[in-house]
Amino acid sequence: MRVVFIHGAFSRDGAWWWAPTAALLNRSAIASTAVRLPSCGEAGIAPTAAGPGLHEDAAATTAVLDEGEPTILVAHSYGGMVASQAGEHPAVRALVYITSFLPAVGETLATLSSGPDPVPVIPHPDGSVSVDASDKAAFDARFLHDVPDRDLVSGAHDRLCAQSSAVFGAQTTAAAWERIPSTYLVCAEERSTEPDLQRAQAARATTVRALPAGHFPMLSRPELVAACIEEIASRARAHVASR
Image (cartoon, rainbow, N blue to C red; front, top):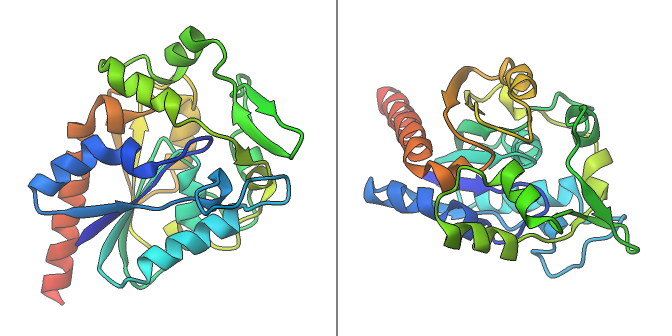
């Protein structure tokens, strides 16, 4: 059993974001890898209004899943859109959504993430967009307020990037959570994706857990994230063994 991680919007280097959690899983003999998202420029193509978009991100995820090993697919924030699109794959045994989205077929990120306090973004002439982190204190108060390690906070800023605006309007054509067992981790101390919005999405999942964490629990409380994944992996192994 392995874990495949999908990171969220406006960022790159998924392996870095998930590293604290991955290190704990590795101690339990659970290997992991992180998908590189083309929409964030991680496939060598600069993001624009035309893409790469959600479906290219899903294709990149499918390519990792095609390696064939039984997998728990773990998605953060925007990554839930990708996991829902790509997760109905023979290798996937379970889905984990962290302060994330479980779109039904035909839904878009723009619709699901709409609310009274939208994330401030900066549009670029090429059609890409990035999160507005110009006010570092405000950004940290919203997204990183519970991350105690200042090196991690600095590293997070270093890995913010532009993303194709195409991801926001792209409609899903699959909803893996309808058929694959799923767990939603509600981050109760979120200051960006409101807990009520999270709970509305979590209502679609098979199981719901609450974490006392903000937007990036894989950085602030990796032990809690790893413990949840380890429990899910144990159940998935037992299910396979009972067949």
